[in-house]
Amino acid sequence: MSQTPSPAPAPAAAADTIAFIGGGNMAASLIGGLVAAGHPAASIRVSEPDADRAAALQARFGLVIATDNAAAVGGADIIVLATKPQQVADAIRGLALSVDATLISICAGVRIASLRALIGTGGWSGAIVRAMPNTPALFGAGITGLHASEGAAPRARMQAETVLKAAGQVCWVDTEQLMDAVTAVSGSGPAYFFLLTEAMAEAGVALGLTPADAKALALQTFIGAAKMAEGTGTDVATLRAQVTSKGGTTQAALESLEAAGFRRILGDALQAADRRGAQLGDELAATI
Ligand SMILES: NC(=O)c1ccc[n+]([C@@H]2O[C@H](COP(=O)([O-])OP(=O)(O)OC[C@H]3O[C@@H](n4cnc5c(N)ncnc54)[C@H](OP(=O)(O)O)[C@@H]3O)[C@@H](O)[C@H]2O)c1
View 1: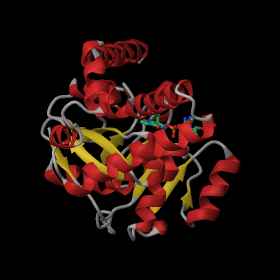
View 2: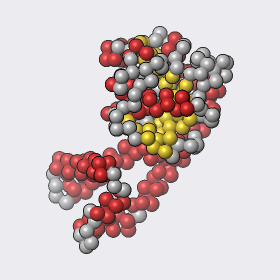
View 3: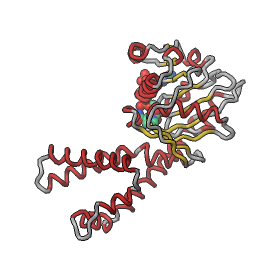
View 4: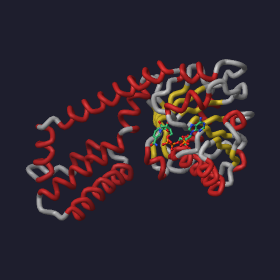
């Protein structure tokens, strides 16, 4: 797995025409990032069945609203598939893509083989890149796991990076199966953080703090610790050791967590998410 940090948005591939199929939450955050990075709105097209949502996107970004999916993808260099997984088959079946267009799918669990089967080969020989962003992408602070189809050209990888770096950092994985692991770690990860914050605030209330104080203390502690880990660049295990004085309060708490099997509990949770990701992929493949 290789990670590409992106403190600043990637320079946009200004010559590329990008067509979004589906203009929902994730598409809007990617489009916002692309426009902020200097990609001309006139070379971004969106096909979105909800007329109000389409109009809002046009008003916000000045992009092109396509009449339908076929019009959106016609002549486009990059197609970003951004519907719900269950809507994919209706959205792309039999679409005519430009011969070397790159298809980027952000749809959870939808496999490369299913996407190829739906589009068909008729004249199209471009690469497919699967992408798994996470919800902090909505604030430009996401991280996206990426996997490219076999034989994908460097150009296709660069195109995928350009689009996904609009939402934060990217991280390439070598096998499609590892996309389930990415989903387990970073796709579902924000929910683990929210649960941890919730549990820590509840524990603070049990110790006598007001709910508002406990919530503020817990949340800002995690935000500050994350900034510290990022800012110092020091390994998190070292940072943990540095704040754990021998015989102190932190050591008492960490020993209690380790004794209760904290790492095993988290490991089991991620295994469950990974298994569920594979199952969802199987279920979707069976319907295509
Ligand atoms: N949100 C996240 O945090 C997140 C994280 C990782 C991956 N993803 C993936 O990102 C994808 C999009 O998620 P989202 O949260 O952005 O969903 P969303 O807000 O529901 O956006 C999907 C959009 O696609 C439209 N659509 C439906 N059928 C279509 C069709 N045939 N042609 C063109 N557009 C169509 C939908 O319109 P209607 O509403 O009218 O149906 C909707 O506006 C999902 O596959 C999800 O797995 C999301």
